[in-house]
Image (tube, rainbow, N blue to C red):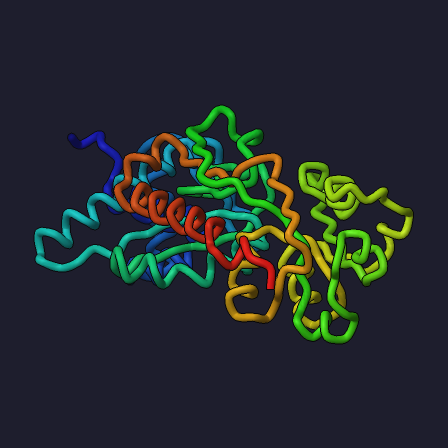
Length: 311
């Protein structure tokens, strides 16, 4: 037993690697940064491997450190839960959730209170990332993405298929007149969304006009451009034009009356929303609880009656 790594050293290493600094780890463990440094140096000497790169402005785990970090994080979460259960207290779970920027800012961040009500206090790190994410390096428990193509080697589950459709503000309709047909939209200010490198997977105004049976014209490229769905929606709410948007993000604006459907035609997205969980994280009950909750929220939002009626 004397050759086993120090439990205090392992705890200091896990906290420093997860938080990104000795100071943050010290605050979490109620010791000094110097004590964290001493514990980690002793651990490195004991195991005979360097666990951190010390750089001018901070620390980064070495390959050896990254290799053991996910298992340590899970282990200490379990130990904390056991300790709380023995003492009669309630464990405060930790969770790292990753999703595209528009999903986080325009939908998910506004619904987390529902999860807390159902499952109790949880420390959630809600982060925005582009695909693909590095689950092990970033300690991500669950990733919500559009399509499964980036995560074919992981356990990825499709949860709902969304659609895009034209929306605008009531004030815009009052100012520009009702839109009686798809062809009428060619005469209205259009708001485009530039989704970046993966934009080929998303429907554009040209796609929508073709589906509506209207020959696209060069002027479908004219108008304002936003580089995120939520920015395009905000522009539409401001009365600047008509935008195509996913139901997941548009639902609350439609429910509040800030936006209305400008036309009944919807284009189903080419790929579903998916949830990906690394195999080691799937053993944590809080992760599986969040997965079930998030899938249910996504399904209920995309099935909302506000998305399927035109004002």
